[in-house]
Length: 624
Image (cartoon, rainbow, N blue to C red; front, side, top):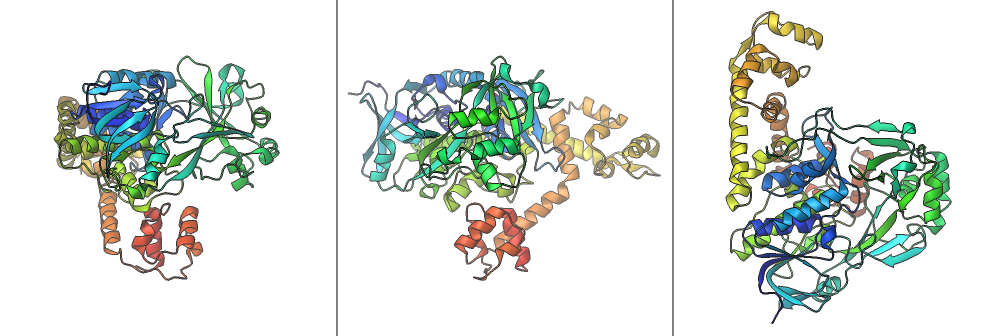
């Protein structure tokens, strides 16, 4: 008889970002859930940079929040700085990003999980899986305990046979100071799964007291910071900590090159592929040899700690090389190290072995989420965990699966890319991967997704009520602008100040508001608008939603038309000797297409690294 009194509906293996979201979602849907992790103190640990969000990643966090996940809420509660990136571009590119207090982030996740009904936590290492024919029925731990479950979700991060490299030194580990996990990969391979190896890395952590910030460029947060969560009970930051920026130099590069013969990346000890868009410093100076300097972002790890994350200096070079080179960076002349950077290799399983629900094709009731599927990033992992947790719970309840399409969410793009194209290098989300990105904005994730989640019982009625109010009042405001006129004497002073052509007669607000020179901070200063907004309790979020609908309606319609065109042209043939190098598609796409030589546009679109934007360019060159 097991020492566990319950046979679980869902067991989640691993307590990182994927595991935490998976366990929370499954339990909140009523499934009896167990989260097994090596260390309860390191739940949802920020293993790399102490930040959430960024380009496309911020959209994913907002989608997780809209669906009823916790990544946005935890980030808001523990943030030390908030920025909306790409505000100078169109709203499809606006991407929220927050620096977090690393220790408080993990603490807040732990507290959140402990207070979810139907969820048990257990500290142990899983070293085996229990199968009955082609179904999984439980797990085995290093203590020899067998725990039975209807479904199992593996979210092992970088721990599966993890191997850490620092210069000539190599040792087992899933993260600095934590052992790797063995047994799971071996059991899966016995069942017929294909596996591979990937690599990621992390930079040194240093002591802020040893840095000279006067030699760096301050990077403050937004003057009026926003937040990730759509919940009104979560409030934006009222104070923030600054980051800083500095640069490497040719002298730094020369010192790093001197250590290349001792680097595991260049002496052959690391053969697995690392993230293309988050390369190590040695990879950057090797690939971009003509660049005289590279940016480094100096990020505090919390409100009170002196620990600093050296973003942009990820490395696995020997400790002495790291120290010698970093001390030639402006502001780092007297730097003291908390710990050195390192690279880590780990097992992953090509995600083409998965269904859209993230259940494996080979073994029923077994789900994979996070870096085990070849992704990189907290946000991508959390999104997969949420979807795996939802679908594992729904399966135990004999309910229909929950699947998001490419036109509904970045999460849908992520999962479709993984299972359709697979990946041979750590997959990272970008806005360019989404052909419907004008529709998949960070401002409307709640409108797109909360209703869907509420129907399955995850997103709360409180969230749904808020979304319905947002839609209703945004439409009310939009209609007001369409029917309300403004006189020249009221609007012309603002138009003159904004270098926009003046008007000589009354004009509908909608037409004026659509002018690119005006933003809605100007529009809401008009007396009629100000009164209307106040009388109808239209808040900042509703104003923003209305602004997007006014200014970008044409772009949204065009995006839909382009997407429909792509669908109709899936059978377009590509000549075998087509010259990809003569096009202006991305460098990555040229490399992949020249290697694979797809026969059709449809086949090309499924190749990892070939974005929807690249496909659009190819169609132009093909004359379609």
